Length: 229
Ligand code: CDP
Image 1 (cartoon, rainbow, N blue to C red):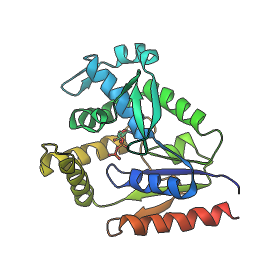
Image 2: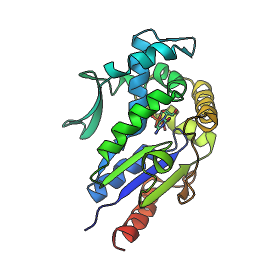
Image 3: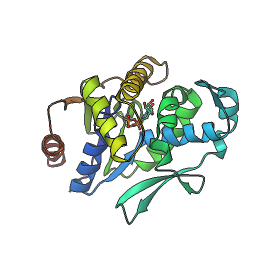
């Protein structure tokens, strides 16, 4: 059966990764979380004291880009791929609020994006891949056979992220999460480099009122239609 490329873009915390992961499992495709790569680059910047009060020392970060090695390695116990930064498993740490609060400014930097996009395109050469992010259908894989643009209301997205972090026993407030969701949306949509926007040929999936099972069904139907063409 022919293999296709599936690009999933959309706002923060709208369930892109849940949908993309499950779709990848159903189709036996590779799933790549491109946001994890920007998060790992942000963790690198934080650890090297290159971010102070939200201000990124862009010049130094750009000069150190070749010291950032990001890999995905399959974790047998959780049965999913973890993100590794320079030989260390950083999957947990990149999901925490300090990284979330600083990732969008880091992701505005042209040189950072160029490095990540080159890595992402190399991963997608063989097709049979689902990647989620902000610029996958517009910049990384403009020729993807299926492009999905996902969204949901701000409150629904903040609630989902809040539940996820509380489930991981993190001490967070709903207000802080909602603020973070709004700020990231604003930066992601208004930045100069590859802003978040719907590709002209992307299908919109608003999942405010859909369960994970319903959204997976929707995506599977779309993917199979194209695969069987
Ligand atoms: O999980 P969530 O959707 O909230 O975010 P993420 O996918 O982990 O991405 C974190 C941040 O990385 C986003 O807010 C964007 O600023 C940036 N990003 C990006 O610029 N381009 C991508 N392809 C993926 C993420």
